[in-house]
Image 1 (cartoon, rainbow, N blue to C red):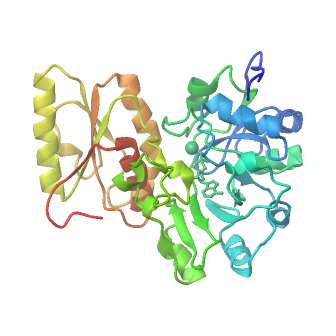
Image 2: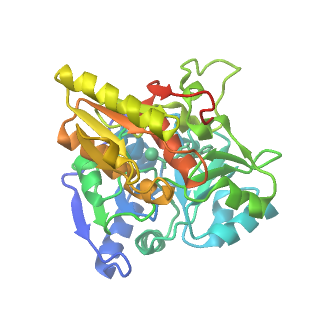
Length: 371
Ligand code: AMP
Ligand code: MG
């Protein structure tokens, strides 16, 4: 990775998300072809793209983000047939899932051929593939005329970017260009499904829920890491006993600068507990941020109270999640007390991100707390 040259400046191009200007897309596609890095909007979060077949360009992604080298990238294509460029073995189930859910927020893990550089998959013998639905992403992939490897366009560990401004804040001066297509719609990363085992395994929850996948694929299992809970933070990654199937899931991630405490349980207990904690911390002179929902916001009369969305509509929470985590940092709070939400449906994707942002700071109240 040694002698990577930083770009002299980062271009910032604003485009119409539905009909991006041709000159911008052409220039951005050329940057990718020449081995540069371009950040672009997808329907989930902003991605940081490079030519999948260019090893040096792939190294630049890890470098710009400060991403651990054992955290693999997702490869983006614009037409379904390109799946054959990226995988040596596309099962009928993989094709069926692709036909049902693509273009869209579903990533499929398939066997990796030698033609896809090992660095893309952090040395794994599998590769992650997605066909996104965003017009800018699709136009860029077509213009580049190669599949684009793209993780989220943030500094590693920070909340993922849902606006081009977030990308600018993290990566200005480290990448070649940013295409601003407005805020992303879904707000959390794609659902990742591993199709290399006997039963499809959901490694990372997203907008497409386990039930929706099961309705198409038959029985699926939930990888332990999908819940985002504490066991995935074991540090002994050399142990034979613990090898995550999705290496990225072992890191504390999506985290604002201020420590985040996630409080899980039923509403009366949780709101009471958060109020007590908030009073205590405020008395000690600390600025407290409270992450809450429309239905429960009125319980709080102190601190910086930010409403993420409707508790009963977790997709609305997903859409605002990262923007709000970044907002707490802008407000300069010393700590964040976050209310959990039931980890079902899209709520599972929200809780996966909140739990991982909390790291070990998860407080569970009550006997029949969610698992
Ligand atoms: P990001 O796009 O930044 O959300 O990162 C991509 C995530 O996809 C990684 O952190 C992994 O969790 C997952 N991923 C990518 N490739 C693979 C793979 N070959 N096997 C398992 N998980 C993968
Ligand atoms: Mg990421």
